[in-house]
Image (tube, rainbow, N blue to C red):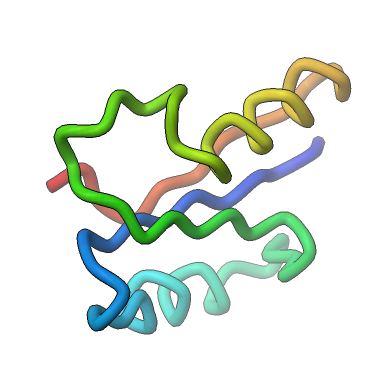
Length: 72
């Protein structure tokens, strides 16, 4: 299974460490499959640079699973 990890914070000044630390606790975490966007939540998901890259990779690898820490 191909696990892809997505994290977003709203501003460049914010830190995504809480989310990435949660991912690191998972046995199947692979840092090369971590996609992080620093963009406001009002930007449509697919228009976020790294979300788009993640979905592109997911569409190329059958059985991909997208993991997020929170949706707030």
